[in-house]
Image 1: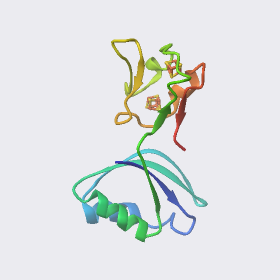
Image 2: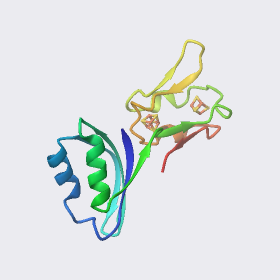
Image 3: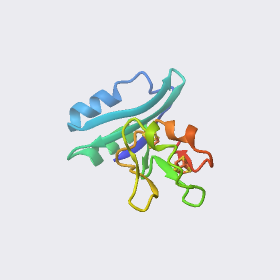
Image 4: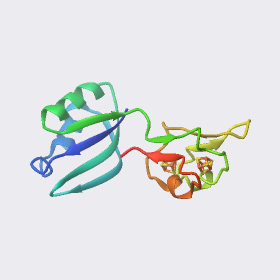
Length: 128
Ligand code: SF4
Ligand code: SF4
């Protein structure tokens, strides 16, 4: 699952993440991070048999966890299927289907936001 983790200043210096990975033997992939001594956010992907237990543990330790179903949101009303976003995606998460419609695979998306810069109709938003 993908999730946004919010850290308050009081827990930024703690080893909660490394402890959680060790205790619950999870895969923990950091997709984006914006952390300073004042706190911050991480966009992460967590998997493993004990993923749900690991999330409960992180919450108990003070991290706010917000599960994300979609990293990017494509507004189909605004999208004109121009394809400008396709080649900018570093992980090939955007593709052109047989009917020429442009589709974003949120399982592959890492939330980098590059596609948003190219869109002439502002049809793509990255979850913040
Ligand atoms: S946010 Fe980045 S990874 Fe996700 S679809 Fe856009 S360019 Fe690709
Ligand atoms: S750049 Fe915008 S309008 Fe063009 S295909 Fe991508 S999402 Fe659609």
